[in-house]
Image 1 (cartoon, rainbow, N blue to C red):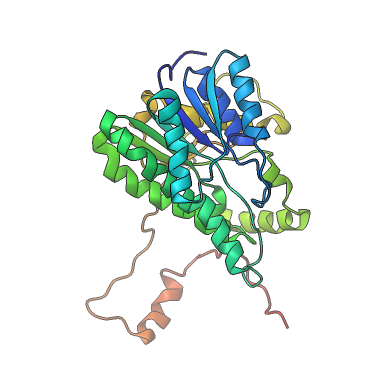
Image 2: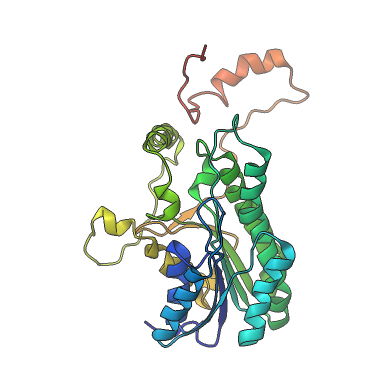
Length: 322
């Protein structure tokens, strides 16, 4: 390993376990001083424990790195500001923010409560705003910054996760917008779709896994007709368990926080497993046009042979329930 982040200061939220822990450890290995932020809560956001963050800090220090623990919440504006202030007080600057912290309150939308909706959006989406808003003025002053928001492929649609999907895809729009605002200040911001065997994935029931797998199979029919361009490292193929290791996300996310990684901004990058993937922005795939206002009669006639032709919906049609 090199010292690509030597002299840099990074904040990693949700760094006490899983994906966040791997990111924090690699940040420190590459020379960054790290604020390890984690409330130590359960997957649903309940309970608090200082142990996860403190244990990661101890690991980093034992390996010769520099780190401090922080247990402030990303979900409230003032509390999130304290996380950034911890970096300033402890190390004198802030160069990189990785917002990994998240919770789950999975429920079908017809059973979801307002509190379950609000809690998930508050941690993921408002947490992204809170962290970016607190860090960016300092990054502007030093003309340097790297921000990685941990979104999710669930943002493309996931049964039983309307709150989580909305929050995660909201983070993508946020990153793309902010990238335009901050590029002139040498600040890069990207969203990533991570993955791996974590506490979150372990909570998903088998029946839900099967349903989502069926829906993903149907949705695959709408994928791009062009094969993706891939560059592979000359290493032996590993087994599926190794591919699901959450630490596989760390090198790709940390790369986006390096000097070289700043050439990439406003993008969505897949970091799960062995591949590193680039997602295309949404773009128009079909269009119909007329000189004047459309009528419903005209749309009845043209839609089945134009925009609706060959369209594969997210879920195959099923008979209505009694």
